[in-house]
Image (cartoon, rainbow, N blue to C red; front, side):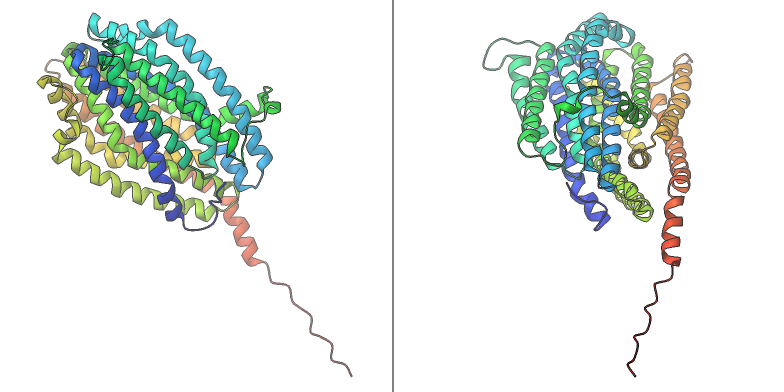
Length: 468
């Protein structure tokens, strides 16, 4: 366990962010590797895998419910020096991860084809996407266990083990992808099914490695079977914090589904270009997101310890660092989009769409970085409802106008990207206002306590008696 209530906040952020970033980038690389090798199967296969991957946003919503609730409550317990509560929250989160994983598997088997039919451009795309999603479903289901274990470690200030496990899982995925997708060395090519299977095998190995770490090395939080009996009160605590944050990812799922819907008439090349561009954009946003995520446990531990000044300082320092990082990647996307997109498709129309998307939508980078930072701070404070409100506002100001624009004469796909810039900027402004209001409400009592401690007169030592 690492005490984040002491020491330099900037140092804590910079020490935690790189391992978090590496872990997230490795997950994104898995998706990009799938798209890279699938691209040789044709644009319908790329569009199908990209569209199926959007379902991951919905599953990520459920993962965030557990992850955010686990991080916030364990971080608060660490700040209070309450190890017993931290362990209870962790073990109850493990139980929920098993239930959520089973529910995801059942829903995936029942609804995969129906989902693809609602957004895909043609029958070939539907078939490819459904096949990939069914084989990718075990990976999504197992990620719940990974999320809970990684979140518990991050709440205690430990991030390197998760990074190492995820990096090794990606290496395994990269090694398996060409073998299973294209049949390298075996002569048995499974196509898009191989892409999903490679990811599922890699995630399974990652879960086993994290379990081994907890069994042998982790000491602050640990598996206690006696605490696996369902406790509804603890589930309520976790879900009260996690559900609004999960709702944020559900909004992203809706946002992405709307884009796929309005691009249907432009054909599979447009959907494939959007899918590639979205994943590359997600990759270059990872450094900013990692910095924001590092701020959450720092704010959480200090909030649990009653140190309001360090909570505010955490936000200011994180926001400044995130803005600087996002500005650099904005410049890269504007002047070198081809460098970022190289190798993902040989289809000129697909790459033209991806390049146009990346040039325009990258103007969201700074605003998106501030949204990330605000969301992480809300998680650290243990109140994620404002995150859901700002995300819902973004969807409303984007989805309805986008669908309406798609019905108008002269509609072009870049209209959707410009609309996204406006909606994201509005969300950033609302998030900043909501966080300022949250600070004034949640940290006011801390300021009063600090002021009263400073106002208390120091005890006066009576003068020593002088012997006659």
